[in-house]
Length: 358
Image 1 (tube, rainbow, N blue to C red):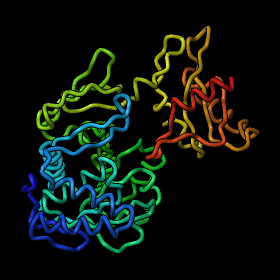
Image 2: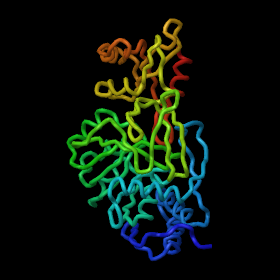
Image 3: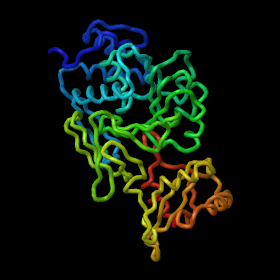
Image 4: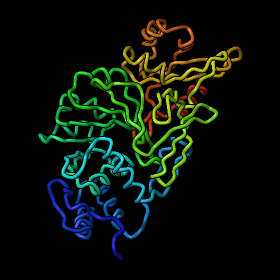
């Protein structure tokens, strides 16, 4: 059967050009057999993209519930790709870097944007310092914060960079202020087919406010959590677990996760916001969490990734500078934090471990 998707004639893959969708599928099948692991993931996606099925199966990260496999319609993925193109004013023959794994939605969507809008795509292994190994320059790239940290000195090779897959901590955001490139924090998840909102991180447009992509709007549920409406993404109506300050139907400020909110003595505390206050002073992995407390309901705690618990005294001095309702009542240590496949700290697992120690 004929493939459902068309290949843009200007598309390039590491300099290679393809006359037809059939030609790139043949190439992908060869790459699947002989390529490196990151190339195999790309090859598998390309073959599926050009098959006769109208959808792509993907696994969610669990941001809106238990991780599960869902079907994303290819037409909706194309709409998402073009929304990014409109937002950044990018079209055919723009150069782009793919340094994310194609196993996940962010990497898959970089491929979709390139295939459908005719980008000149440079593909490299999703290493922490991928861009430092090459002299190419790019109009567009996407990275996770960990990669950005390890490529700060090479970021000037990119004109526009989106960062996703985790919160940008204040230390990294401060370092990005000296860069001439345009950097954006992205908001989205697998269910929204990558990002649906972006926030300028540096330059004259720097802000804490996320702005919707074209044809996306926002609302709040009764918990104060973000609700996403996107008619071009399959009439998507998605209720998230992200607590936000909604400024209007097109913009919001992110506060934290609803399932992380701590109610201590009747005061709602957002761990992510307290962590932002501490990141300039705590250079080891850490989280703000809570334990049950008879008087307060929940008491605030600080959990540090430390091999030597004797170092805790140093951190007591740091947290003493916080306002009283932001100040953790206890400090715990773990030698190693449990993390997801994509490097996100498993907060609930850590909380369960601390309950066992307490």
